Length: 77
Image 1 (cartoon, helix red, strand yellow):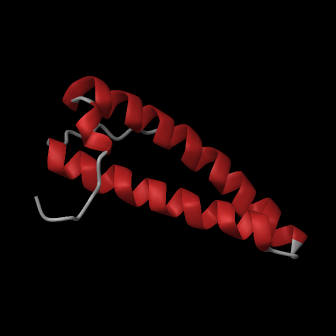
Image 2: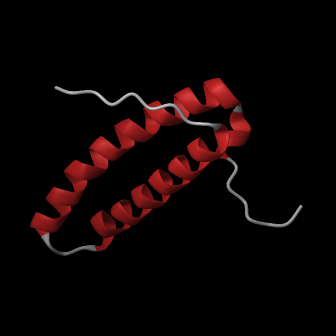
């Protein structure tokens, strides 16, 4: 299996994490509300993989940048 090594600065890590978290939420919502068993199975399998990826990215990002990398607010300071 080929592997992609990626180096991110904090702002890029935040964008990636926010996108993954948003996607996870949308996929979980589909699994919770869909009546289509095939759709639930397909998205559910992808959701498992996404959650594994998200866990690893979160752990590495927090280790590298600290917990603030998980703060995504858009409110003005």
